[in-house]
Length: 168
Image 1 (cartoon, rainbow, N blue to C red):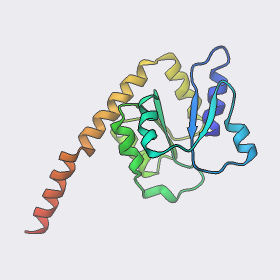
Image 2 (image 1 turned 60 degrees about the vertical axis):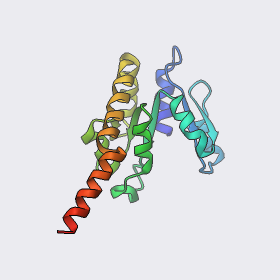
Image 3 (image 1 turned 60 degrees about the horizontal axis):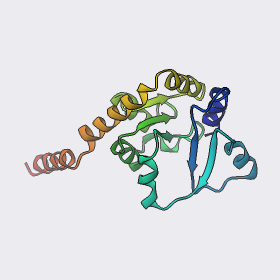
Image 4 (image 1 turned 90 degrees about the horizontal axis):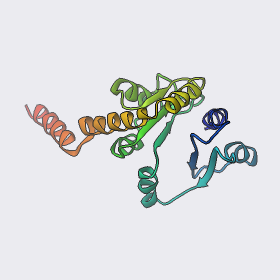
């Protein structure tokens, strides 16, 4: 998050192009709170009920999905947040190491703008500033990926095929 806020600070020097709303249940130290809560760039909103999460997603232009560069525990996990994000019809910015399964998925499916290094974050934001149509393009790509791979019908058919094969 700090890399994102720093990139936004650099890009927003002459006018406000981006603003990051941070919703988190994670307790933050005073130093972290101050670093992430930057006037004109970002704001820590705290936690919100699940019923409001989808409303906030629909009101956002870009949803940020972050995997830690330090903690590699999630290397093989697949977060349900991914399918929520894909179904939102919003552009997804996925940030994390390239060998984490969620980042690999977004890359392989071309369903999100992907940064596999903190150094790429500012570059992506500059691309979005110069080509705002990328936001709509990646919203569509992500949504289509969700339909293609995660719709109820697709999953039902896959389960049916697996069960039929098991019964042979």
